[in-house]
Every structure is written in structure tokens, then in C-alpha cells.
Image (cartoon, rainbow, N blue to C red; front, side, top):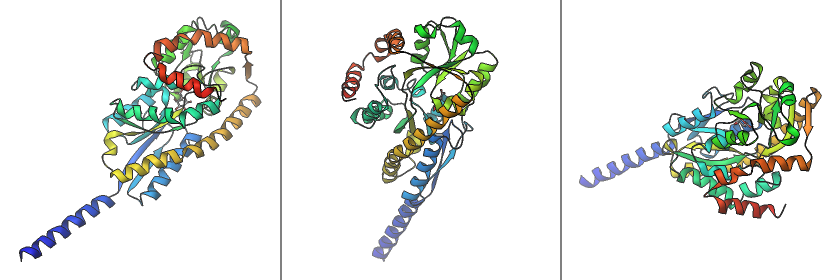
Length: 336
Ligand code: GTR
């Protein structure tokens, strides 16, 4: 009788565990960009593959166009509170919570996209992803997505007011991402950095004169329609800031260690897909902007050197403590 009871109990336990392991968990993923944008497409691919590879145990619903969180900071804080499972954001606002991330987005750090990706796909990139969780931020860094290079865009009046050939933005108010390093960058050029404006609000902020311009890559400049409000694009390519897909550490406790591994691996597997989409979008966005008759200002190597020199103090101010990583990144650049 006793034996029978033990067997029955064991069976109940096994069934309970099995049902726990196969229980379905549904997460939400907050995305800033609209449907069809490269990062949104990659989020959707990530969600599709996670569901497939976990055999339906983990479902991720992607919400584009900032509907879940009006700013990337809000999305990050929702992850920390455990009220949101995932978000795809720029590494720039994440650096407010994990300062080490500034070391991979300093101005003029990479020679080109190949150099950037050799770093991100290599040991340094993984070390920085690990640093996100190790910092106690409550966030898990899953993978990077391409976001090209950022340059300034301003109204015609602002272009006349500043002296962009000499990296002089005196008197100009420029919308920056929520990251103290980016605000300081503008100060070093003589201007004022304005934060607290979500990517989706930049267009109206320029139109109403709250700011004279902003800075971003070709795809965001085009997709948000900002090129219509600020039709002068000065190609100084000051930073290459990767996108990051992050998960809430609290949410990660709702899945089995095996499924968490699947999530991590799947995120990495979608990097290549995003990069393909990125390359296509970068080209089409540039074409649309040029066709619209915007003024595209190319800078000479000498002029670019002025930007680099003026922004150089950021290495001491925000790179302090990460000298080794910065040196390693530069060393990787010797191959490019
Ligand atoms: C874009 C990035 C967005 C957002 C935006 C911004 O390049 O893809 O996630 O960070 O910049 O400037 O707010």
C-alpha cells in the first residue's frame, strides 16, 4: 500500500513538473520604430524563432511605434520593474544605467562599419553584453543590431547660424538621446543638448522651435520624417551607436534555464538578418532624402578632424576606467 502511494505521488510530481515546463509564457517586446523598420523586422523574426524553438513555451508579442513606452528610458525601467519582458533600444540610453556601455559608443571610435562589427561580434562585444547583467541593472543584454552612423541635421536657419565647417554649433539647441555623454558632446561644440524628447517627438520639436535639429542615421532621419522639418544633413558621422535587444532579468526567471539559452542564442541568430535589412534601408532612406532635395553637407577630412578633436575630451570624461577596452577596440581597428 505504502509503495503504491509513493509511486502515485511520484507520478503526480512528474506530471506537475512536465506541465510547468510546457506552460506557455507570453512576453511583450517594446520597439520604438514603426512596422517595416529593420529593427522591428528583426524583433518579429526573433519572436517567431523563439516560439518555434521553444515549441510554443515562450511567446513574444512585438509592439512597434513606441506604443508600450513613450521613451526608451521608460521601456528600460519597465524591464527593471519586471512589467515588460523585452525591448529593443539604442545602446545610448542604456548607458545611463550601465555606464560601461559608453566605451563602445565614443565618437570616432570605429574606422568603419566593419571595424565596429568585428568588435561587437568578438570578445569585447560579448564582454559588454555580459556587463549589462553583471552591473546589477536588472537587464540582460541579448544581442546587437546595426544602426549605422549618426550625423547632425538642422533647419536651414540653424545651418546659417552655426559654422559646421568648423564644428561650431554655438547658439544651437540640438535634441540628443538621454545619455549625459551625448549632451556633453554638444556642449563641446558650443551648443546645447536637449533631452527628454522621444525619437517620435523630434519632428514636432523641430517644427515648433523647441530645438534647431537633432542627430541620427539615414534610416531614422528619413523614417521619422525629420528630414522634412530639418532639411540640412551634415555628414560628420560622429558616432556609431549599436542597437541592443535586452530582456528583463525578472522576466527571465519565468522561463527554464534551457529556454533562456534558446532565447539568448536566437537573439544572436537574428543579428545577420537585421544587418541585411539595415543595408537595404540605409540605401533607400538616403535615396528618398536626396530625392526630396535636402542639403547634404559632406565634410573634408580636415573638417572631420576638427569634430574629432573637439569631441576628444569625452574619452577622459566618460571613458575613464575603461581604458583597456578602448585600447582593445582601437587595436582591432588596425586590421581595417
Ligand atoms: C535611433 C534608434 C532608436 C532611438 C533613436 C533616438 O537611431 O534606432 O532606437 O534611440 O535613434 O535617437 O532616440
